Amino acid sequence: MSGSPMKIVSISGASKDVGKSSLAAYIIRRCRECAAVKFSLHQAAPEGDPILEQHLSEGDTGRDTVLMKRAGAHPVYWVRATADTLAELVREVSDRIESPLAVMEGNSFLQYVKPDYSVFIMGPTFDDFKESAWSALAGADTILVNGAVGAPGEDALALERRCKELNGKAKVIFASETGREEAYSIILSRIMGRLGGEYFMEEVDPKVAEELKKRSQEGRIPCAAALKLAEELGVSTLEVGKAANQLQIKIVNCSLGCF
Image (cartoon, rainbow, N blue to C red; front, side, top):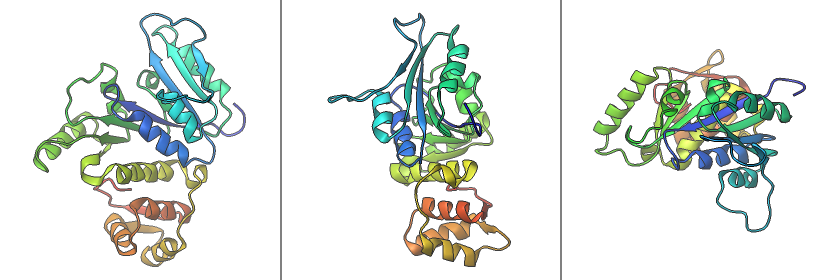
């Protein structure tokens, strides 16, 4: 790769079909320019090239890499590795990517890559966790819980407490409480805050930016005030987060995981 180091957003998960590709596509659609990679680990080396580039043709549906490609990522690779070949294939596919940002999906590759932002997705229990999921959860910046979490409040609190025991730094988001789109927007806002808004193409609402400037002090605004601003203006927390990123205003004292 040439120029500035590539930024990496990783999306890992507790099990198959937990929602990784849906979030990946959501993020990719909002990138100015990004590549995407899906890693899968196999007991034996699959036939053919272990690094396959996804191209679109009429009738392509279903595969995770197709979703990434249709969302706008270029190039999109599927890396089919074994435990013995994974490290080398991670290096090889990274060297092929010239985009400033890559969205990478999987668990196994995380032992060789330090993402700039990491999301872990799980269901409402710890049942059916893959072996590789435990370390992925422990290294995540955000844990997204998909699915209904038993009794409202009580079971969610217990699950969040357990997640915090395994990863004290991660913010936990429950899609059943926020709705999927809002959960995704919160995650995207956090990614933008970490990486910088220049990697994404959404424009800042001038009304939000103006109000944010008025209510901030010395380049900072409390989370509660930012949430109130979003409510008053009828916009998502993502809009407030985007404006804060552009204005370099830090949202502080955030305990709800919205920014």
